Length: 103
Image (cartoon, rainbow, N blue to C red; front, side):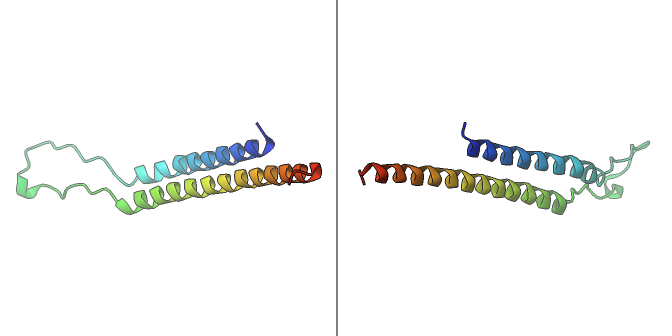
Protein backbone atom coordinates (compact mmCIF):
# COMPACT_ATOMS: atom_id res chain seq x y z
CA UNK A 1 0.00 0.00 0.00
CA UNK A 2 1.13 3.51 -0.72
CA UNK A 3 1.49 6.04 2.10
CA UNK A 4 -1.52 7.99 0.84
CA UNK A 5 -3.73 4.89 1.07
CA UNK A 6 -2.49 4.33 4.62
CA UNK A 7 -3.49 7.91 5.45
CA UNK A 8 -6.89 7.37 3.89
CA UNK A 9 -7.44 4.19 5.88
CA UNK A 10 -6.32 6.00 9.01
CA UNK A 11 -8.94 8.70 8.38
CA UNK A 12 -11.64 6.10 7.82
CA UNK A 13 -10.68 4.25 11.01
CA UNK A 14 -10.77 7.48 13.00
CA UNK A 15 -14.18 8.34 11.57
CA UNK A 16 -15.53 4.92 12.50
CA UNK A 17 -14.06 5.29 15.98
CA UNK A 18 -15.71 8.67 16.44
CA UNK A 19 -19.07 7.31 15.20
CA UNK A 20 -18.80 4.34 17.56
CA UNK A 21 -17.97 6.61 20.48
CA UNK A 22 -20.95 8.86 19.69
CA UNK A 23 -23.26 5.88 19.56
CA UNK A 24 -21.90 4.53 22.85
CA UNK A 25 -22.36 7.90 24.53
CA UNK A 26 -25.81 8.58 23.06
CA UNK A 27 -27.17 5.07 23.71
CA UNK A 28 -27.78 5.41 27.46
CA UNK A 29 -29.24 8.89 27.02
CA UNK A 30 -31.71 7.75 24.40
CA UNK A 31 -32.51 4.52 26.26
CA UNK A 32 -33.27 6.38 29.50
CA UNK A 33 -36.17 8.26 27.94
CA UNK A 34 -38.43 5.20 27.69
CA UNK A 35 -39.42 3.68 31.00
CA UNK A 36 -40.93 0.18 31.06
CA UNK A 37 -44.66 0.06 31.87
CA UNK A 38 -45.72 -0.76 35.41
CA UNK A 39 -47.17 -4.26 35.85
CA UNK A 40 -50.92 -4.41 36.47
CA UNK A 41 -52.33 -6.17 39.51
CA UNK A 42 -55.97 -6.21 38.41
CA UNK A 43 -58.19 -5.95 35.37
CA UNK A 44 -58.27 -2.50 33.76
CA UNK A 45 -61.12 -1.73 31.36
CA UNK A 46 -60.17 -0.48 27.91
CA UNK A 47 -61.58 3.00 28.54
CA UNK A 48 -59.33 3.44 31.60
CA UNK A 49 -56.10 2.29 29.96
CA UNK A 50 -53.14 4.67 29.89
CA UNK A 51 -52.10 6.40 26.67
CA UNK A 52 -50.13 4.21 24.26
CA UNK A 53 -46.34 4.36 24.34
CA UNK A 54 -44.73 6.88 22.08
CA UNK A 55 -41.09 6.73 21.10
CA UNK A 56 -39.50 10.19 20.84
CA UNK A 57 -38.55 10.45 17.19
CA UNK A 58 -36.54 13.69 17.22
CA UNK A 59 -33.42 12.41 19.07
CA UNK A 60 -33.33 9.25 16.99
CA UNK A 61 -33.75 11.18 13.74
CA UNK A 62 -31.07 13.71 14.68
CA UNK A 63 -28.71 10.91 15.67
CA UNK A 64 -29.29 9.12 12.37
CA UNK A 65 -28.62 12.30 10.40
CA UNK A 66 -25.42 12.93 12.37
CA UNK A 67 -24.13 9.43 11.69
CA UNK A 68 -25.03 9.48 7.98
CA UNK A 69 -23.71 12.98 7.31
CA UNK A 70 -20.56 12.32 9.34
CA UNK A 71 -19.90 9.12 7.41
CA UNK A 72 -20.50 10.93 4.12
CA UNK A 73 -18.15 13.74 5.13
CA UNK A 74 -15.33 11.37 6.02
CA UNK A 75 -15.92 9.34 2.85
CA UNK A 76 -15.63 12.46 0.68
CA UNK A 77 -12.55 13.53 2.63
CA UNK A 78 -11.00 10.11 2.03
CA UNK A 79 -11.82 10.28 -1.69
CA UNK A 80 -10.27 13.75 -2.00
CA UNK A 81 -7.04 12.58 -0.40
CA UNK A 82 -6.84 9.54 -2.64
CA UNK A 83 -7.58 11.68 -5.70
CA UNK A 84 -4.75 14.03 -4.70
CA UNK A 85 -2.35 11.10 -4.52
CA UNK A 86 -3.42 9.90 -7.97
CA UNK A 87 -2.97 13.41 -9.39
CA UNK A 88 0.56 13.54 -7.97
CA UNK A 89 1.36 10.17 -9.58
CA UNK A 90 0.03 11.37 -12.94
CA UNK A 91 2.08 14.57 -12.74
CA UNK A 92 5.19 12.57 -11.85
CA UNK A 93 4.66 10.24 -14.79
CA UNK A 94 4.04 13.16 -17.18
CA UNK A 95 7.28 14.73 -15.99
CA UNK A 96 9.18 11.52 -16.63
CA UNK A 97 7.70 11.26 -20.13
CA UNK A 98 8.66 14.86 -20.94
CA UNK A 99 12.22 14.24 -19.75
CA UNK A 100 12.49 11.25 -22.05
CA UNK A 101 11.17 13.30 -24.99
CA UNK A 102 7.98 11.30 -25.65
CA UNK A 103 5.39 14.02 -25.04
